Image 1: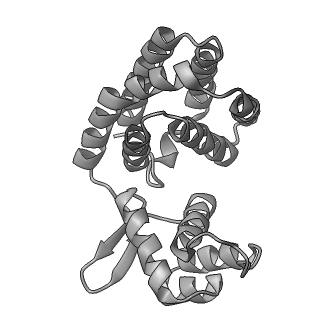
Image 2: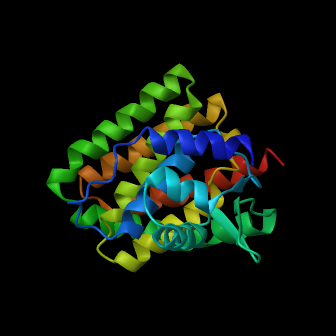
Length: 231
């Protein structure tokens, strides 16, 4: 078993034990905790994971863990290979091109809808998350920037009034960024990408759906250009 599994297991064990009073379904809890671990530990594409070790670390049976892994595979973060092998996703260049195409088609529309209905109570969190991105960009901290960026996109997808659209956009983003392409977060991109995020936030706060849509479209085009400069 790889070092990635050791790191993943350590991260999960440091979480609070799952409370018996938690009314959520266990596979939902397993999904959220495993997803957090995947995004917060130094894992590598193609590394093997152990369903039994994840189950033991979470303190729950393997059935909800298996369901959580299935959902994470749908999200593009894991791959389940026939024979029950579980590996960190390693998308091909064609996978990335396909996912970027989906983002270009759907994400600007999603952000337009979000700008029209984004709730007041979520505005503070969006602003705080954008500020964390700005601080991380100035410090050149790719890890902190990536975590804030992920939360930023998850927050907007969560508040899309079309829940299916929000889910599809997030799944496509996972396939583009995932864990494999963190290297494209170079210092120049951190600064420029953060400024693009800030402009989108300003448009959302102004409920300017048309501007938000155009800005997101340009942002994704820049993601494409910057990503493929690395290849």
